[in-house]
Image (cartoon, rainbow, N blue to C red; front, side, top):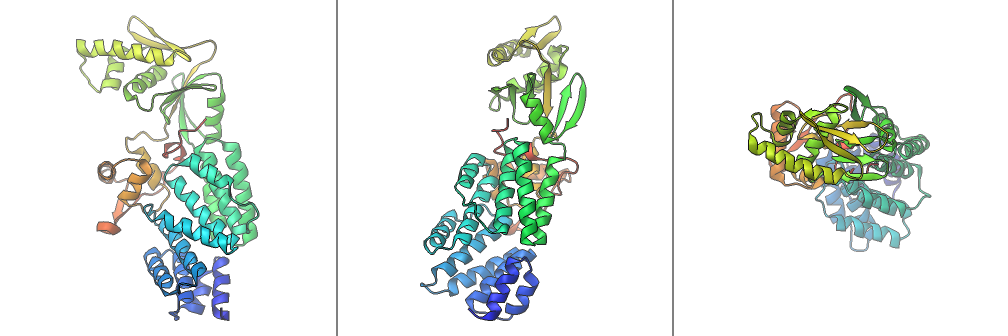
Length: 405
């Protein structure tokens, strides 16, 4: 490898794409194309970066398997930045095996981290955590910082603020050792999520914003907590999930909001069945659904009938507290994904949310009419963008956070 290629590679490793381009911008050989593609990716021109990396991969010969694997890995990182989650993950896995077979530990770890970050974007938090546990620990500072940021994200998704804080400190120290300013800025940006309100606590008629650490403290208390973010009732280690029973959860949330008083029948019917003029059939259905809710909540509390409606009573000592989402919207999960500031395609959003593209398109249209999102591009290149939701962390709205607690 000649001196220009070596110098450009060192500049890219240090996070200096402009210096790298000065050395290889006019060259068209495969190594130079690969470095130019990586530099363009660091500068944010993702389509140009992908084109250059593909040209470089085609230019390497059959005996240059490691060089081709590096191009595949760089292209996968570009796809991840572009929120293209349907790129072939098998190619990245094969690249990782190629690196391992040739003793390239650094690039093998880099490829593994890309696979783990993709799992996180897809909401597969447990899989990401398991894969991260198998990653080597003796890594360069740049990769150590990235791995710590992944651990930080897992800690946020699983509601472990202490673990997230410790990972953030490791990421900050590793980023400082790497000397890469962009990486240090990314760590600082990630750390803001710990200080922002992640939910709203409703108790005794008062509404207070709470951070992730305060959410964890509420869930660890002896109170009966109605978790509006995960649609569940919790008390200590006991959890009753109602995520697949929207009517029952709507009734439970209405009872929790009314605690320590009663929720009148008309309000319960309106919230659960979405009708403003109840009739005898609605009242009969309410009695049936309340019976079902009683059975579900038996380990945690009781639902008592009152002259005017129903009342939620926790078993033993303790209060009833409601954790409400930081924002109330049927499209909150879409907003949470878009809040990272990156451009998402409808196919990537559907894949991350586990829903159909048609459902995602309806949500995006509603959000666009409300002025909360905008699109750029057309056809297959169309991407959706939204500014971060000011004043709130969207951690508890992201898919794959069911393990919180």
